[in-house]
Image (cartoon, rainbow, N blue to C red; front, side, top):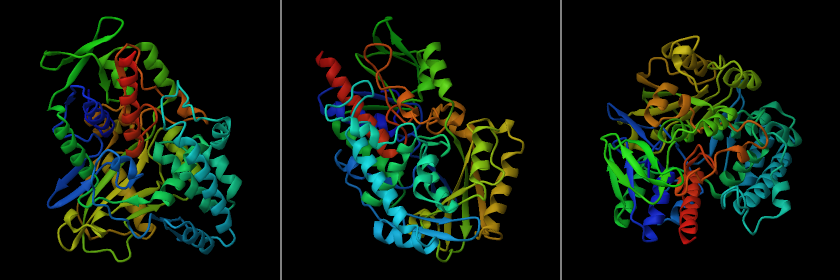
Length: 471
């Protein structure tokens, strides 16, 4: 196993449970990949996912986690100052939508029902196995249920007329690092997940999920080497034979699973220009600009997770994907674990993680410095009701360059290739590689990024290994 992200950890755990000897090489000092944290002066920040969805995916692996359900899934604040509190219960959510925009509550219920049908179809097709082998339970009606050929924005317009609700629905494209004007409508299945099974916080931050998986790996006998960088996948031209480490040491193996960015695999570890060009044709997903702030005092009425929308969503995504620059008027996601978890900040203070979607591009090519962009983001937040003036102990930054250096992500892209076009999910790299015994898992390949999806990918890869070895 090359890389110890969540997808790789899940595949390693399942294969070890099937009796295989598994060795995992991780170049960083801890397991978990992007499920990581940053600490400073008594503050702890989760710099990857901040909510756990589909917790049953992890319970099925034997993880025993303490889970806390926030009072709200999210608080949305629009440029006109209006707010929408998203609750898990669909009836209550519809009531909140009606409060925001009278008459739209029934439209939201119809949108949620579409999402539920789409998710059920995806569960036994797209999420169940590799794209090259449709599961036996797949039906033509399942394909039609995901609205093939339609974008997320186009789907949202079928249900909503209020531009604020179009923004709300378009937000789900960012879960895959994409634009709602280009992303497939199938991403609208996410509300069915959030309102059906909830979004959960793990006390101590979501990196505790990686810690729990690491304990299971140890119990299963997986050999884990930290600080061990793999530089080459070794093959005889037809099948894999093992890997070479940065130390020069060669390790033989019958199976190699790359839990890396697919572009990194085909660009460095096993150079393949044809496959690299195919990945490049997808374009990159967005990256992230993170402000990690130690905030003095407590904020009254702050939701556990908030989204502060820009005034012009179309212009924002054109900045990111067309003009390739940080948006001048960004939407800002705010995560504040200290609201419910005092272990994340000193007494009388809060940790704020503020995330802005930006292009997967080196900040040296931005029209302004990261520090200047930090100030722009804070100014935009202040103008929309979140003024942190005089309360900041510090603000640390993570840029696309940091993500690229830490994880080998192409340009700092969070999810590898972009979901550009209605059929984009079917164009992503698959889980079988071009050599026998080579497999891929993680956010840049099928079925995609996000904690539950990479865990599903780990299960898919483990099943492919077993199937191929039996042959």
